Length: 471
Ligand code: C2E
Ligand code: MG
Ligand code: MG
Image 1 (cartoon, rainbow, N blue to C red):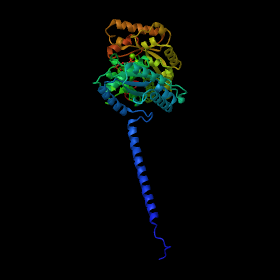
Image 2 (image 1 turned 60 degrees about the vertical axis):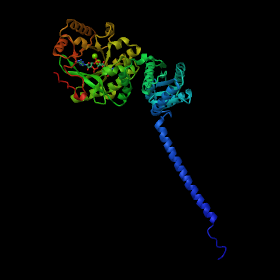
Image 3 (image 1 turned 90 degrees about the horizontal axis):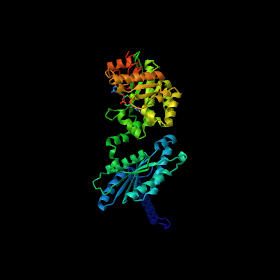
């Protein structure tokens, strides 16, 4: 055998084997790293707010529980900050979601820059943030809250052309209590935040005086934004009947809030909350749009394009620039002629009306939308107001109608209102007609139209009366 015939080189095959093993090891290592990365991502996304990188609700709740336990053990005070941005929704609506996101990230950065690494900073969702600070006294906590407010106010996002927003911050202090439930602690900070917002203050410390907001009211306030976005507000219509012809001349649109169990919450319960929390503008806009669409549908179905619909405006709505424009747009988009729309305002709203409200009323009437003075007789509107020719309709409050059949003073009041209306050439609608006797009385006293249970209560537009149902 020739020595030049080489067998397999033992070194070379060893090298190849080692290389193979090394590659396998590499593959396994990178697979493990990938698995670890995925696990880490999963953990992070379950405790981290993806938009801002701050703690999410889950992590906030866990850390708060820890801090409360530690505070009890080491006798340290804990401060809880509940932060809500003012005007955030307006910015989001005006400049778009990207601008809103930029602002939220800016707030997160401002919070990170202001707080210590040991504090927990989190986002509860929307424009609400929470900070947990342990081992801090009340004066320092309040100073810190003031610094947060300043930091938030100094954010000037590019996408809004530098327009930022203010924060309302509620501060709750643990003060050595060992029996306080974390959820109650959060509720205290939230209550303080809301008090700050209502007072137009940046910071408010929780104290027991603030406990006047009932649980029920707070639940309403928390749920209302969802009612609007999830389309839980419905509009029902109460027929308004002409007292000469007994034809249905139109409807008053009244809003209701459909509850998860199917029941309807009435406006007297939630409209005040909508007013206080600044959501009344959104409610009103929604009602205006639905009311206009509903009426157009009814007009088509009954071939009656004369029918009108009346919507209610609360003082807070009337006081917002652009109200008249939004209502006009709602009618336009539904294809409803503006002179078939009536806006009902209460006497109180008129008495409180500032320049903006006056401008809105004028703007409404300039496009042909009529204005009714609602619940007339219960407020203090002066004859001067009527004389200024700012109204088209007076609605007599049902408290005067209730006893009109047997109380001469109530009859006298209605007689006077009708006379006044005649002088200023406005129509009179009697509200809350429940009996034939009341109907006869208000007819005899010269009211032009009426609404009330005797005819029909408010109902979905598909179920309401046709034009001739009461003739
Ligand atoms: P309002 O504008 O004076 O509306 C008339 C209220 O009287 C309605 O109550 C109606 O259901 C009720 N009613 C009608 N006929 C009778 C009757 O024969 N007997 C009795 N006892 N009551 C009758 P509702 O729907 O509970 O609304 C209460 C108030 O809530 C309204 O008073 C109005 O001020 C306000 N509201 C309703 N919808 C809206 C809305 O979309 N926006 C605003 N800002 N306020 C609204
Ligand atoms: Mg009304
Ligand atoms: Mg009324």
